[in-house]
Image (cartoon, rainbow, N blue to C red; front, side, top):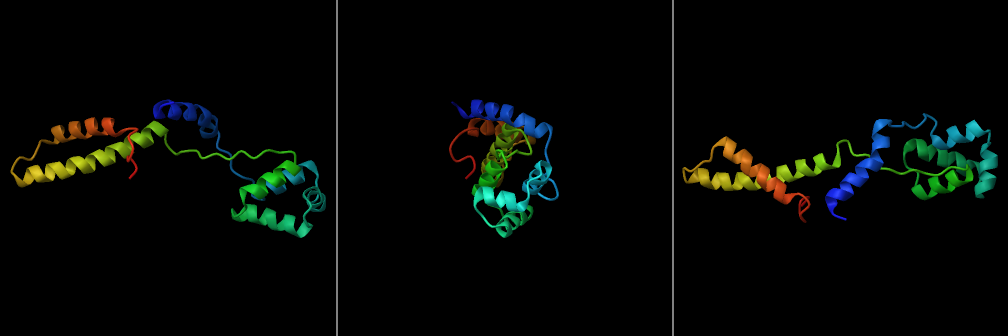
Length: 147
């Protein structure tokens, strides 16, 4: 699958996460679910074969954002839950790629324009913009775009 189609497919998957971002409860998801289903710390500890103190530490680690995914998945399973781990870009992926290609193209064109200016052949602004756009289109999905 080419990168453009991959971005399109990923954007479809991400649409539900962009539409309704979900903030974690103040107490953390583990504690919120545990409390909602009426499971005590001791009961959860027995299900995952840990001490109640370790469960409290895990809940604190979630609130501190230092909990490992492995521990989160283990606790989630004991609570009858699944973990959804997702990175939601702030902008559409095509826009992210276009902006990077444009930055890289602008840097390359600036080097050429600088040399031309030294030779009293400075191009017009509109010409520079067109060259940047054309180069950016060529750079999209090429290796080294992010280097």
